[in-house]
Amino acid sequence: MTHPAYGELRRVSETASVLLENNPSSMTLEGTNSWVLRAPGESACVLVDPGYEDLDHLPKLAEVAPVELILLTHHHPDHAEGAPWLAERVGAPVRAFDESLCRGDGAFGDGDTIRAAGLEIGVLHTPGHTADSVCLRVGSHVLTGDTILGRGTTVLSDLGSYLGSLRRLLELPGGLSGLPGHGPEIADLRAVVQEYLDHREQRLDQVRSALAVLGEDATPRQIVEHVYADVDKALWAPAEHSVRAQLEYLRVSRTE
Image 1 (tube, rainbow, N blue to C red):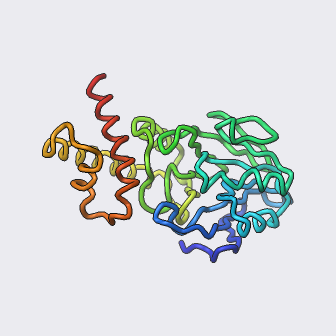
Image 2: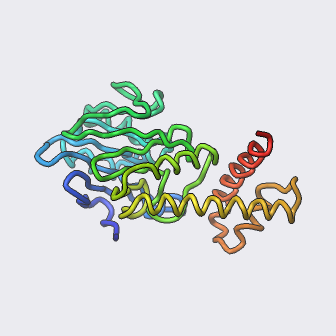
Image 3: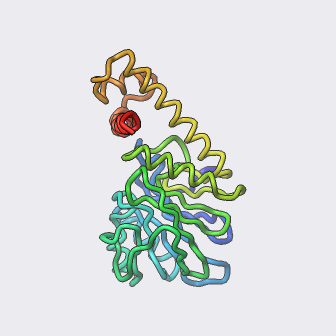
């Protein structure tokens, strides 16, 4: 699917619309997707991931509809930095898995159901990209933050947790679509989750092979240069971050 122009609200379904922030980069793809959720006939909405403190983007979000609640999928600034400004502007609480991000209400936890704007929003704690990452299920949609992207793969902080999160997402019913933090919508979420799992297993095999060639003391940078030789060098820095997570996962696996 194509993205809307920056600053133009695009309706995805009866309950979800998206406003794309103008912050494109190799990490954010076309930019941050700020999701607007509300049940048919409801005037108030829930805003998910308002993005940076971007004073072009945030006022547009504030004007979409009365805001009942702001939710965050994780703490990274391209998702959460603008939440305090927006909360002050619209007079709505902010909730997240991390208590330090919340304003005017408490943190939510795994398995919680949030009721707002005529919707029931289920919380799934899906660590791996960050420790506080969550996915939010709303009807036939799952808002995936950076756990699953609309295109490409995500950067990891903890591979073991991430693999567990992917396996948990595979347990969701079929027929759910994904609404990611970056990139286009995902028509079949479970199919993409399986692709992510397969990709991670492939990368682990490549890292194991690289260690066999380079030696067990190879640095993450040396492994990136070996494994990601065909990848744009602009992506090598985030790839190095993921390789560190892979090496830690393999180290822990060997000692268990």
